Image (cartoon, rainbow, N blue to C red; front, side, top):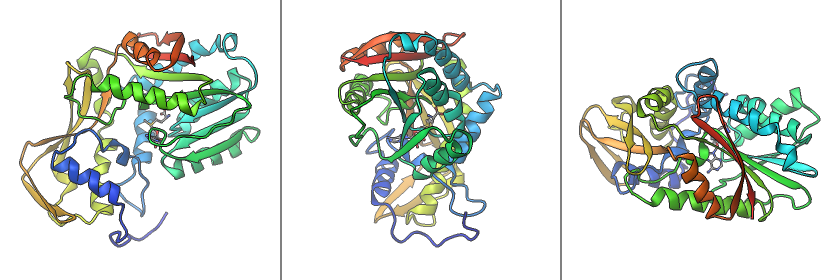
Length: 338
Ligand SMILES: C[S@@+](CC[C@H](N)C(=O)[O-])C[C@H]1O[C@@H](n2cnc3c(N)ncnc32)[C@H](O)[C@@H]1O
């Protein structure tokens, strides 16, 4: 890690700047979540999405209100008891968004063990995340053959081997975090369907897919749970200040965080609330934010399990089996391509 604060990036990321201009002008909503995954550049840097994510999960595993990580592990354990009844032959496990070491040891290793496999491919947009996973495996499970692919698995086709049974998995609710306007009806089903089609192509049209989703419909319950991740969501504001040429008026500390639920669409929107009027400029565009103005940065969609499965079925997958955690909130589905 660098010990001194670097100068503002001159060669900044133009896609990031465009997304942020669209966001604060409200031309688009719900699309900036991907920029939360970040690494610090200097000691004390408030931009540390991956670190905050790991912290969020660590507290959940220790038993706070965020029930999802433990729920996923529980449901997965039941699913894995019979996975060899379905998946035959030598298998390679593909992890879409490995995230933290916690997830590696809690979710991916049990799949590798259940399949008696030593072949693991991680796909992630954050290269440092893949490096961490590789280092952790080298230290604790050197016999696992790991390959990291630094790519966006929604936008890009991921090339996977054809001489092995592919078992692709997505945990951490990534699949139901849709980057769209939470108020638009029918859109979530379309976008989720397009993700399934994308995953079908990663699998070369032949393989298994394990997907985890929070099916909880109790608003008070999931509200308290997801609020525990506020620091992770807020870190993006510091990244805007650190990495983009925003004018001095942009103040990351002047935003609050809340959760807004849209019953009609099933979207639980992560929301920034501007706490005081703010004027700033980015790439020649000026922004005037008012006190109380709300911005939806990202969403977690609370699909009921059968709606989720139907979308998969309409996108070239068949359901093999679903298991829930003991509280019936978190579902793990095993799908197979058709
Ligand atoms: C919500 S975290 C889940 C982490 C872990 N699988 C778990 O169960 O806790 C999402 C992970 O996926 C990565 N990610 C999110 N969107 C991605 C995308 N479109 N393409 C590639 N990686 C992505 C993030 O960098 C992060 O590591």
